[in-house]
Length: 324
Image (cartoon, rainbow, N blue to C red; front, top):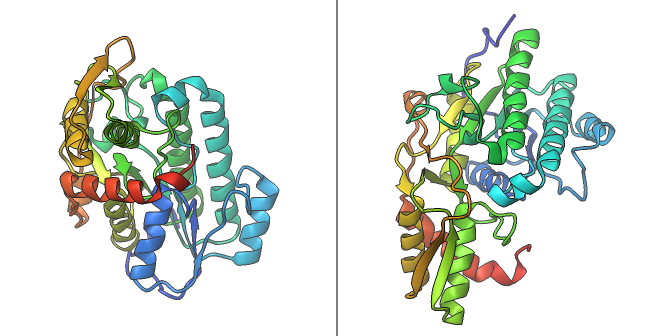
C-alpha cells in the first residue's frame, strides 16, 4: 500500500482514544470543544508542563502509554511579526522538534488518522491571490516569519513522506489567520487581531485620545474564527484524504485598517487611530483559495462581525487571567 490508497474517509469512532496536541491553545481548545460536542468520549490532552513535546523520549513514552487512535497536531510555538522577527531560532527549532517528535511517535505506535495543522504563511510572499495549494514552494517567503514557515513546510512534507513510505492516510490543513477564545493577547507575542483587540480595549477603558498601529493599514487579511476551524478539521478527518495540504479559510478578506475600525467599534473606542508607517506591514495580501475545501463539502459559518463580537466579550471576561 502507498499514499493511503486503500483508505476511505468516514466517521471517526467516538469512543476511540483521540489525542489533541496543544489542547490549551487557540486551535487545540476549539477542536477539543468541538469533539466534546460531537460525542467523543476518550479525549486526551497534556499541557506543556505535563509533556514537553520537544523532548523526544518523553513524547515516545507518552504514545507508548496512551496508544492514541487519532491525533490532531495543533501544538506549536506561535507569534506575530515582532516575535517571529526577534526569535527566529526559537520558532524554527521548537516547531521542528515538536512536530517531528509527534509524527515519528505516531508512526511508531500505529496512529490511524492524523491531522497536521500549519499556517498560510507557508506560501510565497508574492503568491497569486487567492493562494492555491499548488503555490507551495514556488517563491520566496515573507522574511518576517520565514523560520516559522520553513518549520511548517517541513511538517507538510513529513506528512506526505509518511503517506508515501507507510501508506498512512494522514492529512495536513493550512488555516488562514485565526482568532477566538484562548488566543494569545500578549503585547509582544500576539498576532494582529488579538493585538488590536487588546490595544483598543485598553484605549477604550483608559480614555486614550489615540491608538497607534503598525504599518500602513493597507495589507489585506483573511480571518477565520477558531470554532469554524475546529469544525473544518473534524470535517476533513471524516471526508478528505489526499497528500495535498488543504487551505482552510473563508475565501474573503479585509484590510488591516478595516479590521481596526471594526474592532474600535466593537470595543466602543471613540478616539483617533494613527498608523506608524516606519513599522513593517508584512505580506501585502494573504487570501486563500478554498476551492479544495469547498469541494470536500465545507464552508465557514461564523461572520467576521459576529466572531469579533464574541471574541471581544471573551477577552473582557478573561483579560485579568490572560498570559502576558
